[in-house]
Amino acid sequence: MSLSSDSPREKAGYIGGYMSRARVALVVLGDTMLIAALVLVLEIDQLVHGTLYNYGLRFSYEWAQTYWLFFRVTVALIIIAIIIISLVELPHPAFEETDEET
Image 1 (cartoon, rainbow, N blue to C red):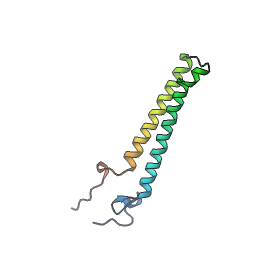
Image 2: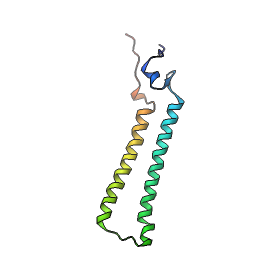
Image 3: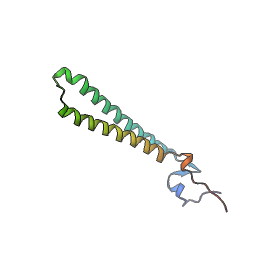
Image 4: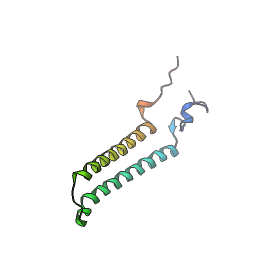
């Protein structure tokens, strides 16, 4: 059974039963940008825990607890965004609609 040009799958970017290359490219680009953001956050963490101590940074729980909280929340949100974008936007057998003829 062929899909009509007004089918929800084609409107969602599927062409001939497969996801369009442009949509896949956008998902990969989005994931790449989020991974780059994650790497930059980890580099900032390395800067705080390594380099800044050489310039007189003194450890204090007053700033450390807030820093750790923001760091962990940021990393968690980036990882969750990568997972959600990949699972929702890329084709996956669990999300496929079955065309059953009755």
